[in-house]
Structure formats: C-alpha cells, structure tokens
Image (cartoon, rainbow, N blue to C red; front, side, top):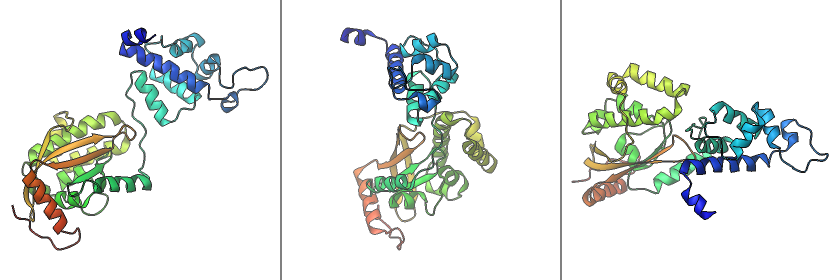
Amino acid sequence: MTQGLVSARPSSLKFAELGSFLAARRAEVTPEQVGLPGGGSRRLTGLRREEVAMLAGIGASWYAWIEQGRAKNVSLEILEAIAHVLRLNEVECLHMMRLAGYAVPRRPQNPADGDRRLAARVVDSFLPKPAYFMDRYWDVLAANSTAMRLLGLDGTNHNYLETLFLDPRARDRFADWERVADEAVARFRTRSGDFLGDPRLAALTQDLCESSPAFAELWERHRFGDGAHVKQDVSHPDLGQVCLSQICLDFAARPGLQLILLDPQSGAVADRVARWAREVPLSGTPVRVSA
C-alpha cells in the first residue's frame, strides 16, 4: 500500500483525498437534515451515495466515480451542488475546490473585533520594527506605532493604495516612489485576480484609476508581482532615510489578508529605528534621531 502511495501522481492523490473527504462528510449528514425520511431499516446514519447524487442533480454513477477518485474533470457547478447537499462550510468548500484543481476564493469577511485585537498584538510584537496588516482591499487593519509614524498611517480607515497614490506627501516619504508604486500595483493586480467580481474591489480600482493618472497608467500595464525581494527607502523628517526590506506573509485561513514586515537592511539602520521608536512616543513631540 505504501508503494502505491509513493508511486501515485500528485493529482491522483488529490482526487483520492477528495473522494475520501466527500465520503466522510456524507456520513455526517442525516437524511432529516436534507428533507429525506430517516429511520426505518436504514443501516447508515448518513446519506447514501445515490441520495447525494439525486439531491445534487447528477448521475449516481458519476458521483460514485467522484468518491472513488476516478472522476478527473468535475465542474464547478457539480462541486457547488454537492457542497450544498453536504452542507459544507466555507473552509470545507475551499478545501474541496482545491483538491479538485480549482482556486476558488472565499467570500469576503468583515474582520471580527477579536481578529483586530489579535492583529494589533501581532504587529506590536514586532516593535520596534514596522509591521502592519492589510486586507484584500489594502485597508490597513492594524499597524504598530513605528509603521504608523514612518508610513503616515495616522488616523483610522486607512487604505495603503489611496495613501500611496492620493496623498501628496507619499512622494516625499518614498525616495524611489515610482518603483514603489509600480511594485505595489503589480502586487495588487496579482492578488486581486483571486477576487474578480468583488464589487468593492472593482469600485476601489475604478476610483484609483479616475483619481490618479499614475495608478491608471500602472494598472493598464498588466504587470504582476508577488512582493518578494522588495526594497523600500523610506524618508521621515525626524529619522532621515532608512533602507528596509519588505516581507509579505499570507494567511490560508483568511484569503487576502497580508502581514507586512519592514526589516532594516543593516544593523546600523535597525539601531536608528529602534532608538527612534523608543524615544518618540506616538502622540508626543518628535525627536530627531541622528544618522
């Protein structure tokens, strides 16, 4: 059996796992939950294959092939129908789609208060280095005090792209603003591809195109990027210019959520940022940190 698993192709393993997953979920759904009569002489507490097929509107043999890992081209419509019958939640739907070879995004979720508090604790744990969270719309959900001061993320309801392209101070904040803007739009286009059809995302893109000729020009280039190996030279009137490496981390459980870490590229820069963060309270009087 081990030999078979080792020699099996990755796609075959995924189809087999998909079948096992559906069978396990089928066993947990009772007939009463889907409007079928239960009890009587039934030996199974869950649904039969034929019942899932009937409720999903597909052939019993075709559904059996899916559970057996033999169906290689299952359409999204069929998977969605099966997911409805088996009462799959969002996480389970995403898992099912991925096993079947689809990359289907989850529906947008508004961050709960608990999520925001956790995000605030996470970014604060990186102090004195700058760190912040963004959602799929590039709204800044949480930022530590160093990131807020360094990047101008003061106030609430802050959107990183709107700050970068619509705030006239942004060009002074980034020594190489054109490159930073180009990389940001390329990364935004890459990530937004997973959420095509999202009305708010479409509205944000349209507003930026209408309000910023620079954004519109970059958007029309159709460049893509993953944000890896990005350098940012950030200037602050009290800190001077610092060279930082941008690190972007994704979260599988929260599609679109990004943790952005800005890591000083040298020990000397790290020391300057640490002293500045320690000596300048968020709401206090700015203190210049010498180079």
